[in-house]
Length: 112
Image 1: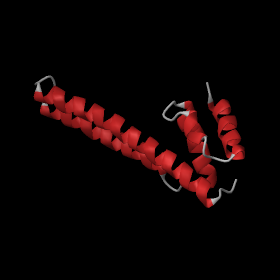
Image 2: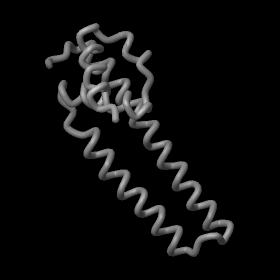
Image 3: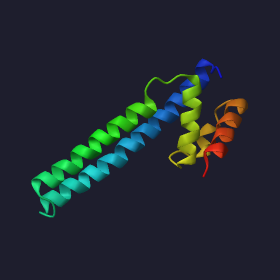
Image 4: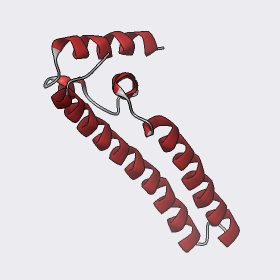
């Protein structure tokens, strides 16, 4: 599938917002680890290990998911984000109907 520039821009925006959400979600976990450490519920090493593991795991995940975006990968990621309920299908309203259909087709295949 080859995307027109405007469609690519819309998908890039959707993906950028989803990535920001995923960073925020990870930051909350890190914030909890810091809070546990500050309240002496975790040792220095336990808190550090939890934060380190989260950052490393998340970085690998985000790089794998969001790097080297081509047209097909952008559509596939949009479908994955839809299935994972990270993004709502209303965000696809500005996309061409054939791209929406492809995303929803992929979403249905990916659903458990």
